Length: 218
Image 1 (cartoon, rainbow, N blue to C red):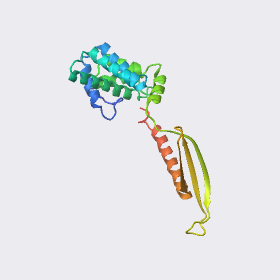
Image 2: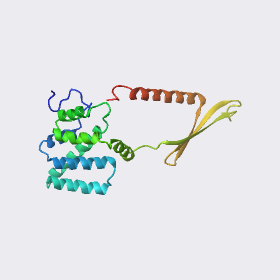
Image 3: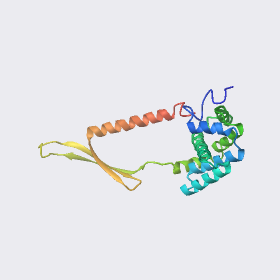
Image 4: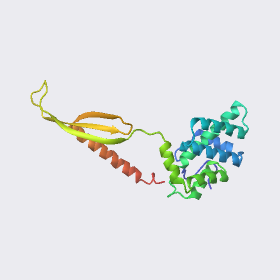
């Protein structure tokens, strides 16, 4: 059996454990069950975007009061613990629950140094029946870039210019309409357009290979 903090196969944090999570693990050893359940509830609400900035601030103040944090150092420690649960939940909700068993998930968290009760409560969030709804809320609440709503194109042929009397070079004009009601238009020569098509197809192929790799299915 692996010692606390060391796992044969790290599932939640395969690369490295964030410093705020390490601080949380140390603090959790003497943490009251009701308190860390408040931490989980508040962190999940933050990730889902269900509470505004003002509501989150009030909730954190109430959390500090529940922890008995009166000095600046104690308040800071409570805020770091809260940040640790946010990072822990964010990583836990990335775990593929179809390929990772719940007991394996709990064992990974206890190897990290969390108590079995704390790990079990976190697993109930990750493996809950409402996980699909949680995922949808996380996607909606996550910052994102604009997406394309429509693509319009046309091909123009330049017959001549002020410098050359005969050119006959096709130029592809693309207009990209985005879902934020903005659009951008650019022109590219036919050779560059084919290069663009090849690059996009190559990236899509690499993304598909990455999605089908064993690492992405963990």
